[in-house]
Image (cartoon, rainbow over all chains, first blue to last red; front, top):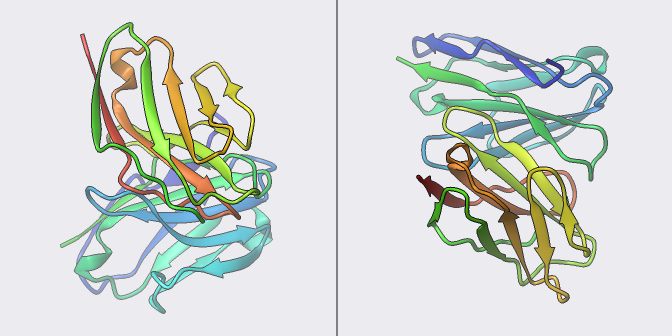
Length: 113
Length: 108
């Protein structure tokens, strides 16, 4: 399967813990995006990478959130000191160029106890 | 990016065509119309996109009005597996802005 891969699929953690998610985009896709989806809502944009450069961060991404894409390949999204409100599905997408379709992974569902 | 308006829900009979409308009256000349769908517990799936011309692929057809203020996604022969939330999105740069979408239920 050459689609977008996200790990883990599910993460359950206690409030205050740090969590890290990984996204492996479709090979040769140099654009990578993170979105967050809460129950009953559509996905919301979080951040965008062009190769290894992070070009935009949404205001939804507080200072507890950090995303990286070393070497322009896979990406990680880390949440420090998790809060109840961080419970959501975190989705990753990749595309070849800006106006090419974004292809999504199946997300990481985060539950904060 | 321009906002879109979609009906909240619609039903469709299995084997019939499903026509999903979308209004985007404030669309700009360089903005694309994208359609995605999301089946429960999965990530959004790209369906089709267009700028001015009608488009067709193996999944669906996209009809864009001449003034580009509205569009229709056509699923030619709906199956039970087409039951999903369908999102119409106007894309200007790179941020997909998902609204509430249309919940489509295909009934046997």
